[in-house]
Image (cartoon, rainbow, N blue to C red; front, side):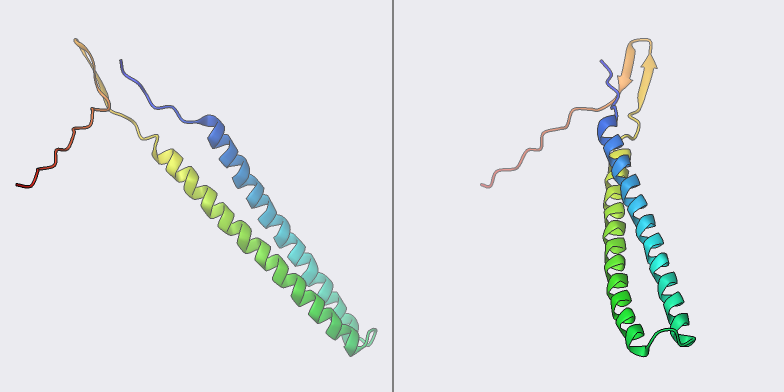
Length: 124
C-alpha cells in the first residue's frame, strides 16, 4: 500500500504562531525605540531653548542610553528567535518533498524502498 507523508499541521501552526509573535515583538520594540528617540529629541530642543539645565539633560542622556540598550537587546533576542523558528519551519517543509509513485497495470510502484543492511567484513 502506498503511503504519502503528511505534514504535522499542529506543529506547523505552533511554529507559525511563534513566528508571528516574535515578529510582532520586534515591531513593538522598534516603535518603542522610535518613541524614546522622539522624546529625547524634544528634550534636547528644550535644553537648546534654555527650558531645562545641562544637568537635567545629562541625566536624561544616561536614562535614554540605558533604555536604548535594553530595547536593542530585546530586538536582537527576538531576531534570533525568528531565525531559529524559521529554520525549524524550513526543516519541516523540506521533509515534505514528494515521494515518486507511478501507477501501472500491476498496481502502484515506487515510494520508499527498504534500506539495505550493511554487512561489516570480519577481520581474519
